[in-house]
Amino acid sequence: MTEQERPKPFSSDKNKLIITKIIVIYSGFFLLLKISAIFQGGWVAANLLVALPIVLLGLLGYYFLKTNSTNWVYALGSIVAISAMRYYEQDLTVWIHNFVS
Image 1 (spheres, rainbow, N blue to C red):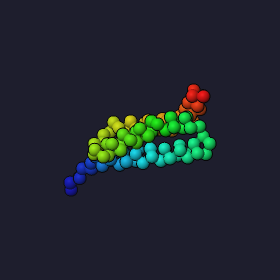
Image 2: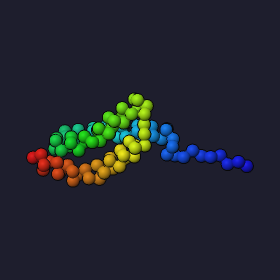
Image 3: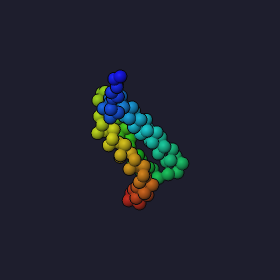
Image 4: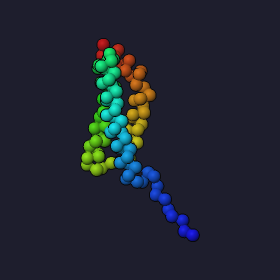
C-alpha cells in the first residue's frame, strides 16, 4: 500500500485566498458596525479612527484579490493586527476621544 501525501495547509494558494476574502468581508462588517455605533450616539472621531486600520487592511486585501496576488505576510499580519485592534478597541476609543477632545 502506498500512502498519499497530503498537501501542507500553509502552502496552498486556496487557503491564502480564503483568508484574504475573510479579512475583506470582516473589515467591511467592522466599518458598518462603527458607523452604526456613531448613529447610536458614539463618538464620531474616535470610532472612525479606530476603524481606520482595519478598513485599510480590507482595502489592501481587496486590491490583492483584484490583482490575484495574495501572500502569507498580509494574511498573518492582518490576523494579528485585527486581533490586537479588537482586544484594545475600548481602551483605544477612550484614549483617542480624550486626545481629540
